[in-house]
Image (cartoon, rainbow, N blue to C red; front, top):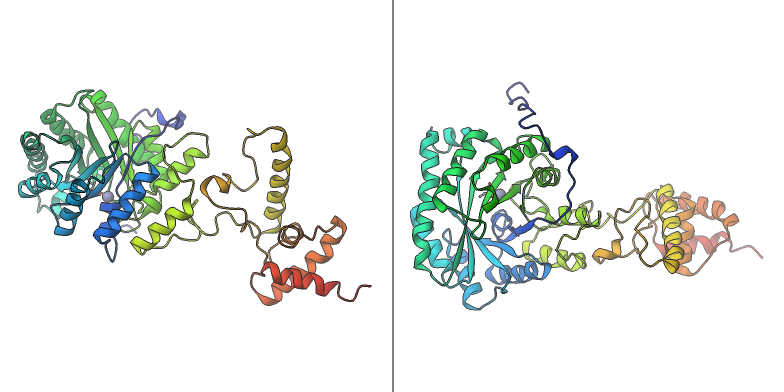
Length: 440
Ligand code: KIV
Ligand code: ZN
């Protein structure tokens, strides 16, 4: 392991974020149709992208990166269809990605012409590794000049599409692996070209393109940038985390505490390699603390159905909020506590409809996201008597007296143990009747 880099120094600022909490929703930007789509073994067709775009609008995204129109005809045509068929809701802004290269930026302007508003997202990679390897030992100045030239060209082209309000977004790609002073130099140079004001804001997106560091270091980097960027009051500082270390959510949450205003990510974390940030995860984490995320995940199974169909990806069984098993308890003690929590809540709700959620082992009420309690208690050899009684009661109307729970419980989990698998509610009922078959 000595060939790998040591952890970078941990204290970049005097940190305001450890005391912070997230107390309001950020601006959300979905990059499903770009970062998500580019990572699919079989990218979405135009029809599939249209369906996904409509879904994102229904969820409540107000900024949606729709693709890289200068990179391929399908991407260009998709952008044109959205505009020409008036499919972009009044309060939604499309965003397009483009490298800071002249012919690509010009083509991007052809793609967005006629849209009411568009975010033109330019990027170039800035880290020492990328400068050395990808850009063949380019100097810092070369890299900064690429960013400046891109911003200048966008500025020059704005008057050519007068019907479209253009917002500039700049990403120093591989930001989290870039020397901070250099990332700042590139961003401030672009800000100097664009001259944003509080009324004509721009976006500085700080990608955690590949996660090299722990989330606390990422948050320090974000805080440092927030403190040093020129015209901070005219800039939306945006997070774009991936998940290489499995810490996309943590990095985003700490990044928000460190001062960022905006979050880019995808549904269920689709995206390059280990994926982009899972926006469902961060938004529902906020909801679980009573903060309105502004995104509507009240029918998550329906969202997941569209997602799985058009991306041909699957949501893992343990994926927070969306996974098949995340509201399921197998172990007896958990089942018992959940049953007690649900029963108590049902009683208390009669007296106080605004009762705070408090069921052990369930961070949120599954019903809030269109999940049901159906699967909460499933029976295998790890289950307890309380769970078995719950299934007999709920599924078959057999409300057993407490004194019967131990004997019935043992019979049924012994059966599950012999079978080495989960038992269905019908098998549980049959085993129950068999146990008492010879009782007069
Ligand atoms: O991950 C990344 O750095 C990107 C940029 C193009 C924003 O997707
Ligand atoms: Zn990305």
